[in-house]
Image (cartoon, rainbow, N blue to C red; front, side, top):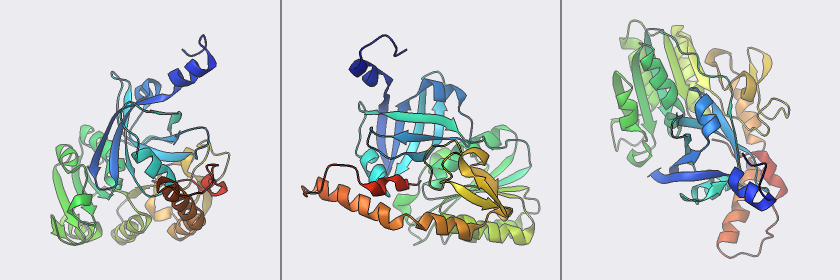
Length: 308
C-alpha cells in the first residue's frame, strides 16, 4: 500500500491515525485507532505494542475492542509514565508511528459454567473483551469492577451489558460497595456453590490477592500479565515471568497465565527494576512541558518500557 509513493508521503500514509480520543476518567483516555489488519485478526486477550515516534519507547497496551468493518481498534490508556502521558496528550486527527499486533495468545474461551471476572482500575478495560467473549460462549458471568474512588470506576455500563451480575466497589466507599474487589470476591466464593473460573486483571498486588483467595478454594484462576516489553516476540527477554518454576515470556506464552503458578514476588521485583529510570523520564518530559532547559534528545532511561 505504501510502496509507490515518496519517502515522506509513505511515512505519513503508513502511520496509524487516531480516529477518536476521549477521556473516560481522570488520567484515563480511550483511543480509536485505524489499524485494519490488526482489527481483522484481533481476538480477546491480545495486545499491541506501539511507538509514538522514531525516538519513542515501545509500550504494550491491551486491545479493548476491535471493529473489523471499520478497520479500527480501541485501547484504554492510563497516564502513569512518560510515554502514556505523551499519548494521552494526543487527539483525534494525529497519528502514531508504529502499532504492532495483535500479539500474545488469545484468551481461552469455552463454556466453563459460572465465571467471575475481576477488573481493578484500568484492568477493567483489559478484561472487557474476554468478559464479552465468555458471555457469548454461554457462561454465567459475574463481574466485579473496582476503583480507588467513583471517578476511577470505568466501563461500568459496558461490563454490565456483558455480565449476568455486576458488582462495583470503591476503596473509599464513594460509589458502589466500600472495600476492595477482593472483599467482594471473597463473598462470592463463599456464597456461590459452583464457580469454575476466575479471571483477574489489574495491578499486580490485586491479582496476587485474588490468586491467594482462589487457591484456598481450589478454583481455577487466570491472570493477564503485562510486564515490561520491548520487541513482543520473545527475543529481548524483558517480559520474562516465572510460572510453575519455569521462565516464560509474557509476550508469546501469555499474556494470560494460571494465577496459582505465577511467582508474583519475582514479577514485582522485575517491574521495580526500572522505576527510578521511569520516574526520571517522566520528570524530564514534564520539565520540558513547563519550559525547562532539558535536552530534547531521548533519555537513555526510556528503554525501560511504560507499562499498562
